[in-house]
Structure formats: structure tokens, C-alpha cells
Image (cartoon, rainbow, N blue to C red; front, top):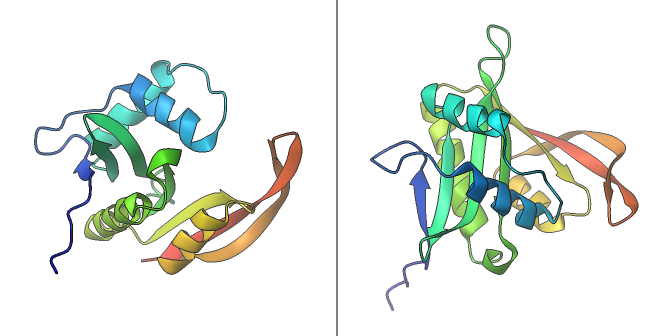
Length: 167
């Protein structure tokens, strides 16, 4: 039986005519994927998006029904010492979780990082976010450390796992 096509598509930001995403859409997706209150996007958010596109850092979005359902980026470290490393951030809207969106975004971003000469990618994930931890471990990330009680989520302090992957 043929495999059904997913209801979403992965697109690279700034490539093949896709252009840059609307910062407000990314901010809204970030708020919903992390269940946080975040201020509206300002000049700093727009600058990060534009700079990442300009230097060809991997940035992908998952789109369904004309709307954003997930995003990922790997932002290069500061030259010259950290220019070969990147920091990964991603989010998938709650209604799209468990459908392969996160795995597809992560795969696209890591493949692009390899192709663009990144040596290592790091990330941070809340210890209670089991699904994200398992996804990252399945992609080869390993825990490199723990930041104790680093974030406040639902009035409870939670540890943050520092993870890394040498490409």
C-alpha cells in the first residue's frame, strides 16, 4: 500500500522563492509551541531572521493549509571561534505533534547544517519535555550537562538538559 503524503510541507526560509516568514507568525508559533507569553516581535526578531537568511544558516518551516505548523533554525556561533557550531531551536504547534513534523524539520535542518560545514550543533530542552528529548536522542544528540532549575514553567522550576551532536 502506498504511503500517504503528509498534510504539511517543509520549506527552507529564503530559498526557492519562499521568502522570509512573517516575524509575527513565527512569534505566535513560538508562543504556542512553548506555551509561553512572549512579547510581539520587534526589530531584534526581524534582524535575527534576516541575518540567518543572509548567512545561509539553516531555517525551515512546516506549512499546512497556508499556515505555519512548525519551525526550526540552527544559528551559527560568533566568528571566529564558534563559527563552525550552531544552536538549534525548534517548535511544533500542539495540534501537529506526533505526526512527524518535528522529525522532518530536525532532519532537514541537520542535513543542511552538514552541507554548510557545521561541525557541531547544540540545543537546550526542558527535562520534562520527554517527546523532544527522545526526538533529539534519536537524531544522535547526547546530554552534555544539566542546568538545574533553570526555567520556571507552570510555577515550577524545571531543569534544562544541554545536548550536543558532532556532525
